[in-house]
Image (cartoon, rainbow, N blue to C red; front, side):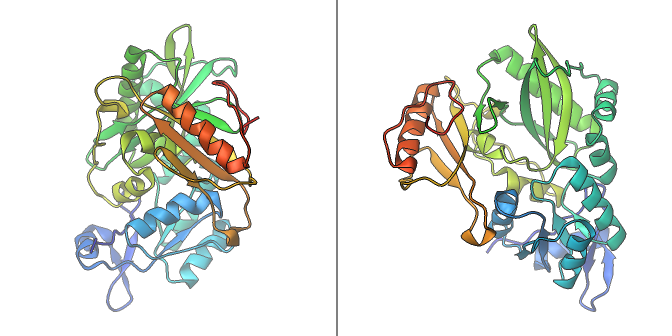
Length: 345
């Protein structure tokens, strides 16, 4: 039986209920919480896909959790208190929404599963984030929309250890791919070094995605976003780490775990490739098989969009699996070109 985790904020603030129902500091209670599994519940923000991975992570860690019931902001915090929850997970909320939730949690005594409030505030302001990264010694990138952008998830623990996973590139509103085919191995290694340097300098604990631009072979920091973004599956299938689970573990004070494969998610030989697509309901049925995953909300969520993830040992294998999955899903033969952004068109 796995031990339940109690999530705390990155700066160590939070509370846990004692046997008499009173709150006490987590600094002294944390070890007891892990040992005895005293976890009353986690309230999840959002619904559908936005809350899917957070709920799955809580289940994986054997944590009781409750859905938002459509509540937002202070109403969500009040719902958490009514249900006896002592922590709130923001799901895939934007940086601005997470900052507001973190403030509400701070005032109400709830633990917030995410970075500290001041760091989230900096992530809401690109200029502030860029200033922090400049002070950390990172080069700054171009803010132009024409410059290529890559996005790199980073995990960090409270002991100052950080790990850069696999970068991804958004190739349209419904299509993303990891790793980016525009980076050389040398640029990829440099990108990972920059991300780890920045995360350590900021004192990040948990999960954040750092975005960089590539212009004339020059990489530079652009912006960052806290917590889950919806694209974590790309790094997960190539690294073997469940980023939603790791986020909770790290904010709870656990040590950083390394992926099952090499640095930046790559083992010896050629890197693998993962492809992400946003799907609408199709006329067929996905058969699954090696290298295929479908993230879909429960019917009760009332949402129709789903996320298809396919991966392989190289780009050719990933594309073959993607074509097969789309043909099954839409119930008809389909061809997907290498640069197609559509759903099997």
